[in-house]
Image: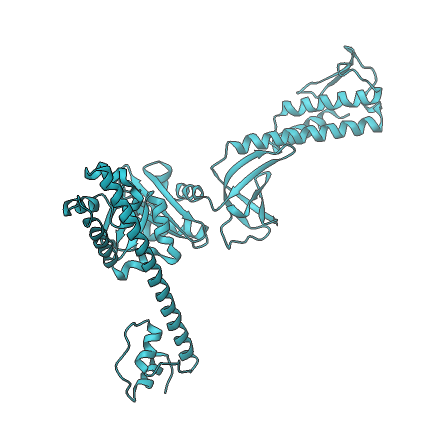
Length: 455
């Protein structure tokens, strides 16, 4: 046996697999003992012992404490096969232990690996010397990798699954964006800028609230970078996911206002009892505040920790009036109490029903009987209001579908039933509510112009 060659191989394995050399030498000794026991059919586990010099590779095999004269090369094929199997198993165990220890320390860090394949929807990635996987739930929707693609991801979890180590990766977790900011924005890594809160819908949009501990450093400007250079690198890594950087404020009202940008907020009423913020915006800002499929207000709510209701001034005023009319009919209520309820963020009969009688008794100083009656009356009125709102919603949906159908027919060159003039044709396409004046000979030509046709 070439001792120097054996030690070179052990050194190479220790270096490549990040395993301590002493562990490999111990595995070698145990494998040699197993081979000797196999050859001699020994039952006593203490019958044989083996030591290997870590410097010279000199091996000493003993039986009952006496040196074994017979060289290991003479053990034969079966013992050699036993030696090989034990060595392979021991090396794998050591490597698994090493991988688990290494990656356990890296949980929460960003790693870069190479995509290998998809298995049952999970992406298998080789990261450093280990094979990891990214479940479908931790992938960005719509994102696909080909074999050999570079994958930058968050090491989310490491699990010891017996015969293997399962390393879980993520690109959808909010902490992935936090780590990207630490990489791209030195002030974040140095904790000059603190990421106070974050809300994310992976693949679509993220809102992140930042604050600076240094008055000379603009938190939002530093995160955006010169001409958006820093934020662009992060957006590119996320394949175009929108990122809204919000300025943090200890005042919930200001924070909610910042979180709803780019929409302009007219008024905010906070109800601490319900953890709800009623936000009033102009009609032209309503869709912007709500966002596509409610995304903007949903992320703002998660970022601030408040339930957010978006209302127009008309809806807000109508809710207050309905609440006032309902409660002022009850003996013991007055205008001053209505003002106090408004200041407490209770702006509708729904709020009165939800807060309950105990809160009304405490805040308004009224009797329990009066408070219970107020809640009962508000609950009854809330049911009526809810039915009216549902009816209005259904009617609005019917009108919207009718207008869309009319527009489709006009684009197809048909005249919808009941559509008698050009201005109404334009109304069907542009969403106008009021019917136009009686038709004129030029109406059809105007409708054709609006539709991009020539008469």
